[in-house]
Length: 117
Image (tube, rainbow, N blue to C red; front, side):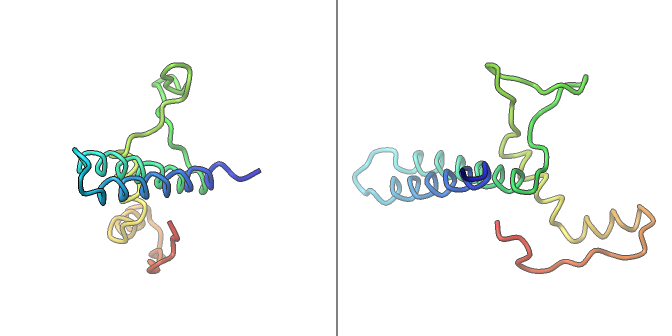
């Protein structure tokens, strides 16, 4: 059985391919809208797969600590929140600034290409 993040990554690839395929069909009406929708879903799945792989939280929580649910399922973060979190985690300026304020002497290094996703 495959890990959940691998299944989500495969779904992201399938959505991106579908979006590109829709865009490349010249006679298809509203091809741009189809492309945008499927690429949005592809990015959402890609960022979810990265968080699943790293065992990081990606669900909304209520003030009492319980998960926010929609139709009985946990509500996952939207693309805007996922991208904000991703940018905050991988921005070398913000990372070094947070270390300076935390009293840490060493600044975490930034390596290009350190994250395959």
